[in-house]
Length: 336
Image (cartoon, rainbow, N blue to C red):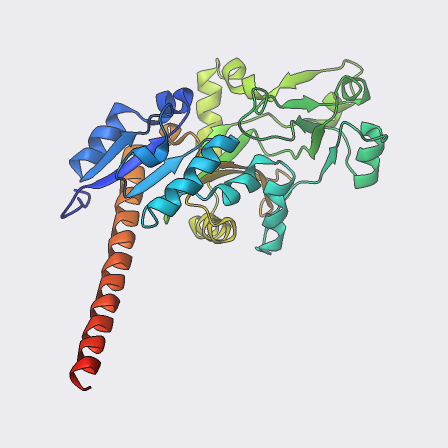
């Protein structure tokens, strides 16, 4: 049996879009958390945040300026309430260029990021010239610059040739496609809790396919739904794919968490088909779809209880410090 929280209940307010509420705030999570001493309370986005609560913690995934202003006002009024996560830290992951810049700075052995180039809408440089400048070759993945909060954030395309490249319009990010055996590793992070799962991805692109005269353009965001009809082949592929070493996954997750200063995120990682020890982080997402993760109710509730303990330990320490200061002051007065 997992640990339940002793003492007062831990109150978490959540501010999420209606879509995120439907995919994340499942009854199974709400009930599991409640049974272990954690209450998940919806924040009314039609009312000022400072008029709601009290909350021990606020979790959120909203990006507009008004929400940021409300969080700042609320933090001033309720400085002991934990905000997960700070808006300025979340912003790093909204941009597909900045989201990967820090990964190479971690200097973790066997871990890299793919080559990529961003072409702005006011650039006089052609997409092909930009690819040549950065040493990119076909195939490439075309991605919108903004990774979250926009309607087309997850509309990714696999571009095999020049013909398809000319159909793209900046601003856009072009990222190196690395053959990876048709399997992607999704690593979910919730505080100190890390879980890695295998997912179906794009199949490897052979030289024959790449050199074909027929132009092709795959919508990556729809690929899984379109290509998993053959359940037997899919199951065999997943079973055959070896998971990355757990120690490696945990090291990457922990180092990324410390660098990003975030509690809730996941990252997509590939293993190069040609070099089995070479891994590449291709995407990092804030507050991802945890409900797709096995046993997500237990993992998230364990995380909630962790932050409850951290908050109470800090408050207890502050209380002890204040008590000691008061005793010292009383002693000084008595000695006058």
